[in-house]
Image (cartoon, rainbow, N blue to C red):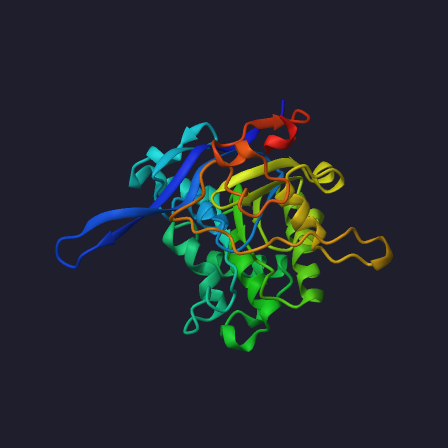
Length: 323
């Protein structure tokens, strides 16, 4: 049986909407993540895709407990970390890390990159002095940055180099899980490929587990073992990467895949255009949240949430079309 490193069970994050200045009262909630369940096998990559505002980055931060869950379980190596106290969570942070979307914003412009990479080592007291310096050089070589440049500042590096520095910092404590929050979105296309290949090489070398968040489905196809499609706070389809791209089931997944550029335009599938904007997570539609934009909508879609239909052991979608 595959070893499950991370599992989420009905995870929710509702941000309160309040009125008043002195005496505040809650008048509603933004349902950023609303009942998400999935698992990631050790050494594998789960790609998380969806439109902007669907809750992908919020979910990544919940998994790392950078923000607290409203309800649900986040089980890491058999322990529900959503219930751990501050001291226990601090010890666990060595095993979890994150690579941010914007490499420029994630690095302190006043710190040399060597000091930025060394920060986790100092915080957890892992290495000091010459040992710390050698570890920083090792990490820089690992991600393709010249170790002699450790005293240079972030503005002296290109965008791709800055992201490599961010990856080096994420690797400093030998984590088991890395949340990659759209790590190639701000990079040129040619540099994106290099960084994605670097992620794959590091995964093979250190048996890393990734939650890889991205908009670009072609990148997700290249790097992911499994794919979860998220819409308005919920996962609407989950499948092995090969199976999802060959045989998507949910109408939203089909619409996303139809927008992916292909090398041969003569064999490009018909584009599925979604009308309107996604509804507000503060006031999501009843029933299936996608029914307001779905061309296959049925009467029951607006009444109650659709059932989860399994097409294989690892492939399911929540849609009334297959009931």
